Image 1 (cartoon, rainbow, N blue to C red):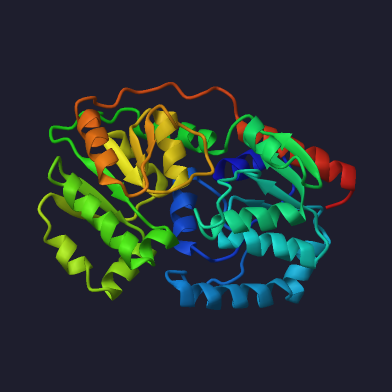
Image 2: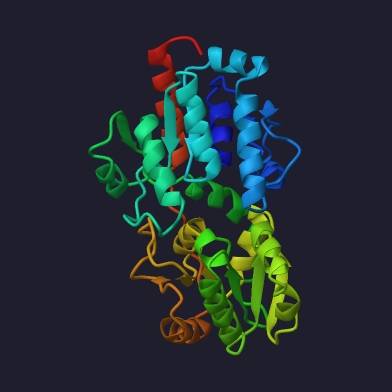
Length: 350
């Protein structure tokens, strides 16, 4: 949403930026990366959600704060409430919009894996948000078609806002050498179904160790991943694995630099799938299903946790260093903000 915020400012559309506080550390990094203004208000400023208990605590506090007098004034002068994606914050924002009779505009609407357990709970969140949204901002025709039975206005945005974010980030990393002296892969895992199912977690870590025998692997630790591996007393063991180096989760530009120099990326994140597909970086997706079509049957392998598929993919990728791709010229953020501007104008003051 960072490029959407910047485009909103560029087009002089009045707005209020409300953070839920689910991942405050992440916003602080993005604020620096994209030179964003400070938020007008943070619902829960004192905690970072890192596990299921803190998630529940955060949600309860955020819901109560949403009804405060200060926020009621903001809701009262607003014409729409904009949410993005499929996170817990997305659902919270959509429910707040419903609570205060604000039309919900959903950015990145219409993505579907058609499997409620993969990814879980994101697929359920996407379905729930589509039920209460008035404006569905869809990245492609497939997403529009997925919402053919949903109420409200569907608009194709000609891509995802990730294009605009990458365009900004690529400017920061364009001069980085794409072929470092020692090749490496990037491994990133943070999804609920992989971390909290011990059998799947063990299989994922087996894949990590197997890949480290092919080439060095940089294991990027999300806060929830760090917390889970520490709780299971696995982190100390992984630190001693030959060929595996642990890297704390980093900001968007730094992560772009990391994958820009890698031979391939192994991840369970849909946004990483999209980034790699746009940049032309081979990518293994540790999921049974994906809501995105980006890169499938090209540079992205939907492998779940099948090492017999992943190993030959990794070996092929090792022999083919990254070659830069030109980013598409269109700006989804411009389409989104123009659509919001028209929608707000039609609804009157706000």
